[in-house]
Image (cartoon, one colour):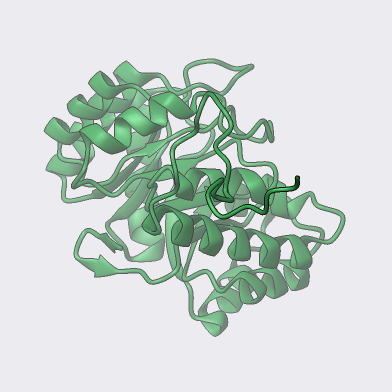
Length: 255
């Protein structure tokens, strides 16, 4: 898969929040083999542990995708993105403009506006969005070359609430990398996303809050690999009636 001219082999993107400790996070990153992690500038600045955190990520060798988590306005998101670029030295930004406090649903109007401003300023934008074709079109027009539709609200673990909408996005944006972002709760959810033809899955809470985050990280990686292989194998379509797998001809006849 290719994001803004950069080849990424692992289709699992991992968030770095809420882990029991930095050591557990490091083990989870290694266990799942991810090449790319998201980091909230606000979260790390708030707890004061930034330097050791960055050192750990550099030692592991993963690519950092800063995000604008917690931003509720265009101005807030754009300002945070510019600060992240200065700190991390990258034009990549995961853009979040939250519109609803309870569901953390994106403000799609502000999202498109912020994406256009950032793209014009040289950013490579990864927009966290709803599974809406029109919003996707507007984000592409704004300069985005990757789309990140949600599976369900952030941290909810509900899985893919509208798989048909994601399937429609895959068909409509056939040449655009699609990353399911938010809502994944179990390995089966991650496999389902890949079976629909998604290019990658971004998840955080499902691993960080698992009883064994390291084991869950590995399980997610295996599920994503299985789902991706299943998609490429072209699964059979569901049928309304049973179809015998054993032919009737050639069966023994009893007098």
